[in-house]
Amino acid sequence: MTARLVLWDVDLTLIDARSIGVDWYRRVLSEVTGVHLQHVPDMAGKTELAITGEVLAAHDIDAAADTVAAMFAALTAVVLADRDALSLRGSAMPGAAQALAALAEVPGVVQSLVTGNLPEVAFHKLDAFGLHRHVDFDIGGFGAESLHRHDLISAAVAKAAAKHDAEFAPESVIVVGDTPRDVAGALHHGAIAVGVASGRSDERELRAAGAHVVLPDLTDTDAVLKAVAG
Image (cartoon, rainbow, N blue to C red; front, top):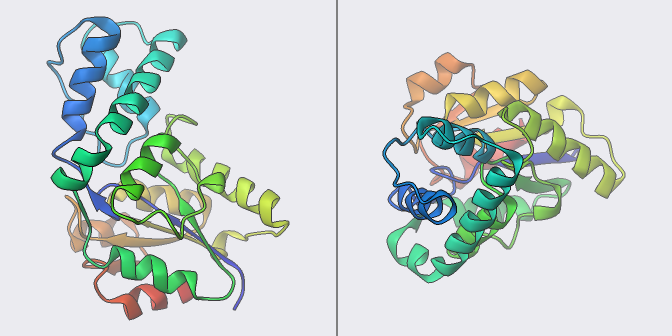
């Protein structure tokens, strides 16, 4: 099989932690700025850099580099402190563990992430549910790298190529996510977009966004393998 790079989204694709994210931002904003969270932006498919900027702007706080860095550091610390609570309040998405394990057995497949999360946050989220084992965190695209999700895909591909001394052509890159932004990022790079209707976007919306393949969820492992194999 030709080498393939599978780049997973995290939230509502591999795990469900939507009940916790707003609470984390409430605590982080208060700790760093002393301001109580009043406005929560739409976070779906956005990078942490974009979300943090929007949160600060909504509260009339300048998104200076040192403030953003302090927000990121506080967020990482809060998620680590909530590691055990995360495993109780959140959940792995159905079929996620089986899909990751099955792809790990396919020759030539490399698995990593393209996620709006910071790398440490992504690790803690997956580790809480035992989903980290088959994911290479060294080569992912993460939310501190750009305001724009498509930049994360380019970053992940470049890291993977350098680490594996191999060229991953756009058609050998598969982006798996639950939002139209995931799909748009994949299409911008020329990658294969696999939409998973396990989040707030249904199958119709993901197809309309241009997804090459749309899955209702990850419970059909054979369907996941077929989507990655092209």
